[in-house]
Image 1 (cartoon, protein in one colour):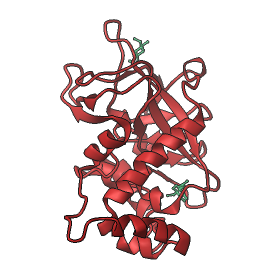
Image 2 (tube, rainbow, N blue to C red):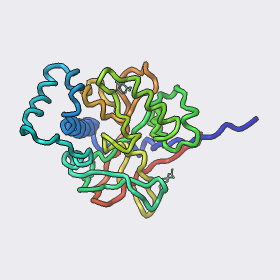
Image 3 (cartoon, helix red, strand yellow):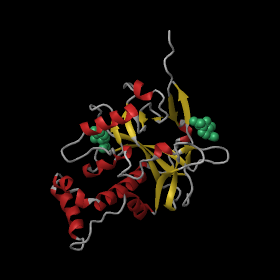
Length: 264
Ligand SMILES: *[C@@H]1O[C@H](CO)[C@@H](O)[C@H](O)[C@H]1NC(C)=O
Ligand SMILES: CC(=O)N[C@H]1CO[C@H](CO)[C@@H](O)[C@@H]1O
């Protein structure tokens, strides 16, 4: 009998996953960043605007009409928007550690407790089939309750994410972001899967925190959530994993988390 190919899963032991900042604060940060991204892209979001209920729409329309006439579209890069909103931006860059590179504070300073990244990917319940997507895939994160997030931007994982993302579209409204699979990322935080593990001389400066996105999350901002559920029947809140700074991280510093792997 041939042995089954083995797979590795990333995880963080429960005692290391104590929340550094309360969920409400993480959510506030995400909402602030997503609102700013949406406002910055308003001229391109007319179809989305048109699909919103009147009170929400007019709030954004006021924003649009407050623009000086004929002014060029806001059009900052998503990274600029992140910097303007939180005072820092993050980006992938070459790392001395891993061929895949790492994630750095690209500008500004991320204070302790800041949300510095999100772990993107397809969300699988414990009992859902992930076998083929998981072979030789180092980007699967296992949450404390066994939910898995596949953050691989290549191969079958990418195809699965794209198809779930397309499935959940409601007219112009997208329920999740798939641009983290491309070089034109809309949500600059969705780089959590590329953060390297810490070591003795490079202690962890960020940690993982799980967050269930409440069902009342503004529909126009879901297009920035870098997670989609594998099952279309999935009810209840969407699981996200965010990375939070354990201390101040200055410009040019690489982010290091602390995770373990288990072979299953
Ligand atoms: C990550 O780093 C920690 C601390 O150095 C170590 O215990 C752990 O095994 C590392 N994880 C992986 C997947 O190498
Ligand atoms: C909270 C939230 O936005 N959840 C969405 C996550 O993605 C799934 C599948 O794409 C949607 O069904 C949820 O509404």
